[in-house]
Length: 248
Image (tube, rainbow, N blue to C red; front, side, top):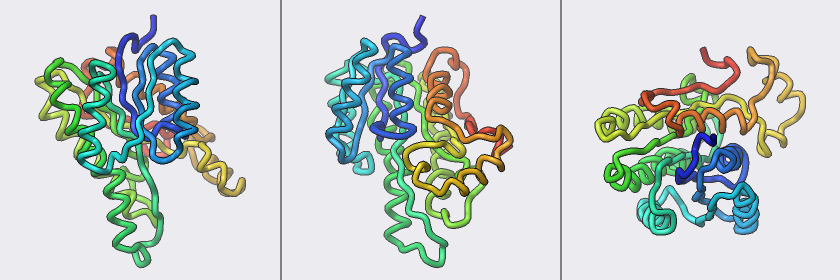
């Protein structure tokens, strides 16, 4: 029995890293997948094909979740194509790291817009249809940095902490409609992005983690499967740290 059989899931930023890991695991668990991508049309087409090998329906949409109208249009298009949106995963995010002394206003605004405003935009776009169907699971991707801060990432930490407060409020507002809102806070996850870091740095990070390894996109995806499935039917307003014990 697949845990997400016949569900329709919308994932933002799914052509690489954590987003791609989530899309693949959800497809394996029987969910149809609508996903957004920013620029890479080729990567999106490739992912569509890969997801379809699991016997589900998959479609990529080039869309900027940080734009309110684009998010509304995206939700409309996905509903027209898939019939419902049962699960929303707000995963799209960027970093523009710098010490506060050096962060420009633009670098602050951009990170808040892409990481936090996009969560508002898309949640706002899906809640009406979810209220009509009287069910839905919203999963927002925060970070260990949103829980404990990080030097050189004041903008990123603010955006990721904001997601937690936003998600808790949504859980309180929409619980009576059987719509759940939860957060996943990944720790150090090894992706294409971290592969560019010096091996020494990565080793140091791994050693500082109680489980002595970096996480994989699958580790995050498995937690998402749980929060999207009916196994977590009585869980809302929670933040699940998937970080090997970095933040306890």
